[in-house]
Image (cartoon, rainbow, N blue to C red; front, side, top):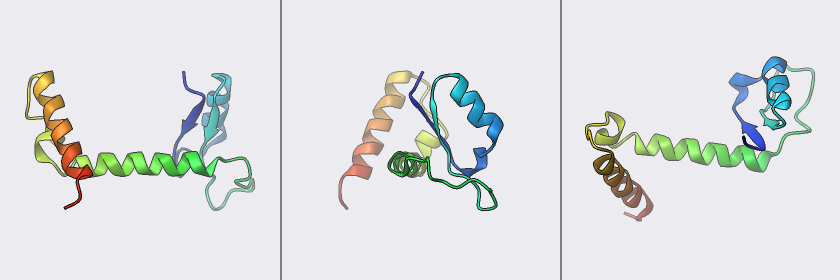
Length: 92
């Protein structure tokens, strides 16, 4: 189990927040604009990291072999994933 559960505004409900707290974790979920309660208790630094990870997955999906999982073997898929990460990481 993790210490935090990080999600976007789509998961803003007290039922989800209570479920996370029952599992001894802290919810990092921003509240919707029409919410009566503010966002005073949210860790914005962690929330920004969620956005970075989400963007990394979005960039990986541009590689067709990864998005459609052409490779049947685990080793070949991991190799293609490593190659795609290297291509994203290198400045072009």
